[in-house]
Image 1 (cartoon, rainbow, N blue to C red):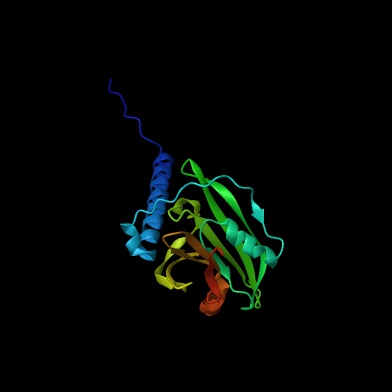
Image 2 (image 1 turned 60 degrees about the horizontal axis):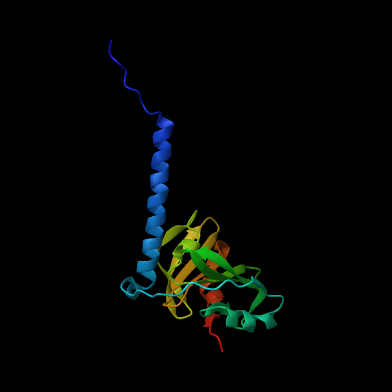
Amino acid sequence: MSQEKKRTPGWVLLTLLKCAALAAAAVFFYVTLVYLVRPELREEKTEQPSLRSTQAYAMTSLSDFPALVRSFPVPVLGCQEGRGLTLISGGSADVAYEGGLGRIATLVYQSGEGYRITAQSVYPARALSLLSAEGWRLADGEGPALAGVQTVRMDSGGSIRLHMQTGEGLYTLEVPGAAEAVLEKLIQPFVLFVQN
C-alpha cells in the first residue's frame, strides 16, 4: 500500500502569500520613506534618548499652543496664526517605543473651505513604526515641500498624507483627497515651531 501525500489546503497557501505581501509592503514603505525624504539620514545615526513619562496634554484653546511646543522634545509642525486655518484641537501623548517612550503631538485644523487637516509631530525621528502604513500607498514622485523640507506623498482612499523627516523629528500632514487642487495653498502656512 502506498501512502498518499497530504496536500496543504489552498486557503493556507493563499493566507501565507497575503501575509508575505503585507510584510514586504510594510518594509518597502519604511525603507522608501527614509531614503526619499532625507538621503543624508541614511548614514546619519541620530541617537535620541527615550523620554520620561509625562501626562497626556490636551489643548483647550489656541493660547495653550506655546505650552504644547515647550513640552515637546523637538520642533512641532503647526500652522502660523492668521493664515486661513482654524485650530480645532490639539495635544500630545507618550507612546511605547523601543522599550521606552516616544511622543506624538497632533494638531487638527480646518480651512475656510471646510477641509480638515491633521499635523503630527513624532519623537524620536527614527520612529517610523509609529506611523500607520495600512491602506496607504506610495505616490509617484515626491510630494511638495513642507516647512522647507521635501516630502514623500502617500495616498489612501480619499486622503493624502505628506511625510517629512528631519534630524530631530518625523512629521506628517494629512489632508482630504478632495483638496488636491489647493494642496500647495493649504500646506504653505505650516512651519516647525521651536521651544523658546
